[in-house]
Structure formats: C-alpha cells, structure tokens
Length: 484
Image (tube, rainbow, N blue to C red; front, top):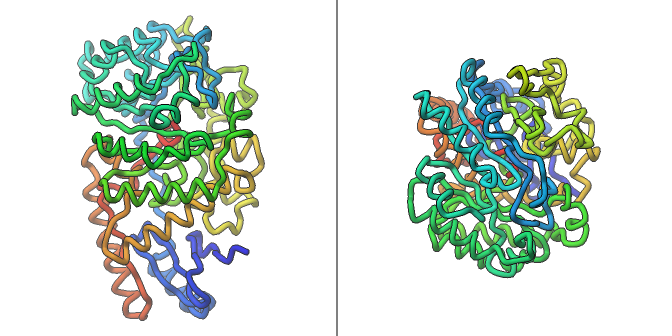
C-alpha cells in the first residue's frame, strides 16, 4: 500500500515509520517532517504563511511571442514499428514550400517567433520547405532569428545535414541503440539497416561542434538489454543530452506496445542504472516524466496553456502535435483552426482554444489526492486524459509513478551530499537553447530559499537545499519538446 501523500500540492514521501520527506522544488529545498508535525495545524499554517507551499504564477509568453511547429510531411524513409504518426514512404501528406513560407511570413509580421520546430514523418524529405522558411528570415534580415529545431530519424543526406549544421539547427535525433537494438525497431522502408547511418549522422553533428544535439531513445523489451551499453557509447562519443522513453501505445505503436512494452519495474531499474552511468560520464538524462520535476504545475500539457501552434500539411492547426489532420479521431478536440492557403488567412477558434487552455488538474477527481499530482501533471492530455480516463492505472502511468518517486529520492540523496542531479537534463538543455537571460529569476529564487531556510532552522526542522546548475528553473518547456 502506498503511504506517500499530497501536502498542500507537494509530494510527501514516507521515508521511515515516523518521517515524511516534503519535496519543495520552487523553494529549492527538501524538508523532513514527522507525522506529529504534519498533523500540527498551527505548524502547517506557519509553513503556509512563510510561503513553503506557494506555486509561482504560470509563466505565459509575452503577448506577441509564439513558438510554432511545422509538420511539413508525413513521408518517411523508415518504417518504425511503433510510429505514432503511421508515417510511410508512400504518404501524400506534404506541406508545400510556398505554404510554409506564407505561414511564417504571416506570423512574423505580427509576432516575435521564438522557435520553429520542423516535424514529420522525416522532415528532411521536404527539404525545400525547410529552406523556404529559413530563407524568409535570413533574406528579410529579421532579428532576432528564431531558434530552428528539427526532430529527425537521422537518415539524412550529407549535403542536407551539413546545411542544417551550417544554419545552427538544434537537433533531436532518434536512435534506439547499438546495432540490432535499433535495426529491429527502426528499419529502412525496404527492411534495410538504418542504425549505422544514424550513428554517422550523430558523429557528424558532434564533429562540427556548432549545433546543440540530443539523442532520443525509445525503449521496448527488444532494446532494453542494450540500453546501458548504448548510453555508454553515446557518452564516450560526446553526446551530452540523452532522452530515454518507454514505447508508447499510439498509432502503429498500439499493437507493438501490446507485445513489447517494457515491464515498469525493469525499465525504472535500468533507467537508474543508466543515471548512475551518466553521473560518471557527465551527461544529462531526459525523460518526459521529469519535465515538471523541478517546476510542478497545476495544469496539463504546456502546449494547451502556452502559445504553441502546430501547423499540419492539410492546413489544420492543432494544439497537439500528435493530431496531424482532420481525420484523426481526436481532431474535434484538438484542432483549433486552419490556415486558408487561398486567401492567406490564419483562422483560430478562440472559444475552442481557450477551453483547452482552461483544462486544470484540480478539476480532475482522478488525481485529487495523488501525491505526485502536480509533478505528473495529469500526463499527456492526448493519450492519458482524453483517450483514456487516467494513465496512472496503465503501463505508462505505472512507469511514471515508479520513476518519479525514485527520481525525487535520487535528487534528495544528491542534495544531502551537496551535489546536483543529472536528472536536471531538461532544464539544462532548454537553458542552453533559451540563453542566459535567467539570472534575475535564479538570484530571486536563491534569496527566497535562504530566507525560508533561516526560518525553518529556527523551528528546528531538518532541511536540505537542492543544488541546481541550470540557470532558469522556470523555463517554458513545451509539450512538443518533451515528447519528440
């Protein structure tokens, strides 16, 4: 029976018969409280008054600042067995370069575009659309340039790869491990081996040293035994950000996950074996469950709350990158507008968009007393909260529960020794993308934590400060960045 509890929105983990560990990341501290202290109304009221349980306001981007995702094709040169998008070489869903350029032209006239994320299929199969978008900003001398980000399977022609590197793209490259581990899950469309091609792509990006890279690994029963060895290879070759996810039951992945989903306990055990390796190798580890670990929230996916728009090949605009056309079963829920190519107008259903933005975990009784409520944040609204009533009861949710509890205890153990954790990967990676504009936030947060610690020490409560290396705890990490 789980004896961990939710205390004023923060997780309290039972660490022995008499004590609970409260994790308060916004104050950068752990606090050990006894059962007696937790049940002391006056004591808890005092902690509330000094701001221990305060959540910061949701960081909404400036009015004219947006991030966009351009899903420029559903064509792909691989036939991944778990592909959520059901991409294939024969797909006809392609956004024309002209349309892509019109969209960014329209938006850049009225907004500051912070980031453009190219998505597919394999987006480099529609390379002219990528070139058209980048050239719009370069030729018109628009400053500052947006951050160009691409999610790719890594099977990229050399000339195209070099062009992306030259233009300082941020890369997310999918690689499922050494040799057979990757080839079984991500074969070329004619059943050829793609792993060695992807490895060369990774090494090429690393060699040029001008682009930020993360490697994304999808783990099933097939490649879990190779995970440790594969991460070791990545670390030894200079990859600093490694994103590890269990296979997800979406698209073609529904049937694949049914057969090859990892056992939650085995996945989490191996994940933390890799975390220990990452500490020795000085690399950062990422997992979607950890995105809110240092910044809990009471709302669902950030794509619903922040200004993130996903433009699909058919012109539809979605709040979720997984809903890519009007034929999707969840199009009615997530498609909130369209780009009309004939008249060049972007139409947004504000009523629908605002309703999605208003979704709040506090309104979901499934998570009312769940101790990880604001860190788990309700999971993926596409998969967990709409397609299924709750993910915490299925395989994906079980992994989330086990992994997050272990992660909090891992950070706690490192904090006791005055060390940071490699689980800070998301904050570090997106801190690198966003730049060094977070000094004020960190200084303010540190001062608040010091004042809080002084008060708690006077109350003879055991406190352990959390050490962070990232410059900004409150970076707006977008859903599409977390998942893909």
